[in-house]
Length: 168
Image 1 (cartoon, one colour):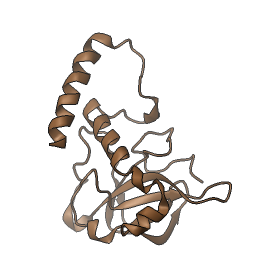
Image 2: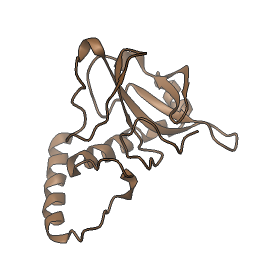
Image 3: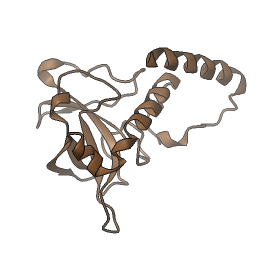
Image 4: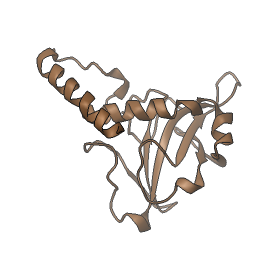
């Protein structure tokens, strides 16, 4: 049902874009990385809205995401929902949420969602969002394909870039 709604919206979007495009980028949130196609942008909007409940770190913990104590510079703190690490890409249900410390000493804030697929489930980078702009990282340390979607913190290198220099 959601996919049907996405296709319907995409049709309207593509039809209006053909007549109204003036040569300017109307979605500055995507940064300088590869621009996702219109259908992927609609998917990303749905993911952002669906997972917005996790803007509150405590809500994520209450829903089973655990802080695994992994901090990566230019990424943040990683919270995993173990039962989602199943080798499948589901855009609405990322395996990880990524939080950054508040520079003023407040609560951590959500900056990205992260998808992971174990190597044993996918010898090559998995098919993720519509189009070919995903930037799956081949993470040898953890034996995972990983994909970040910077939906809650602007990333000047693009929504799918593995790192975000705006996150300490």
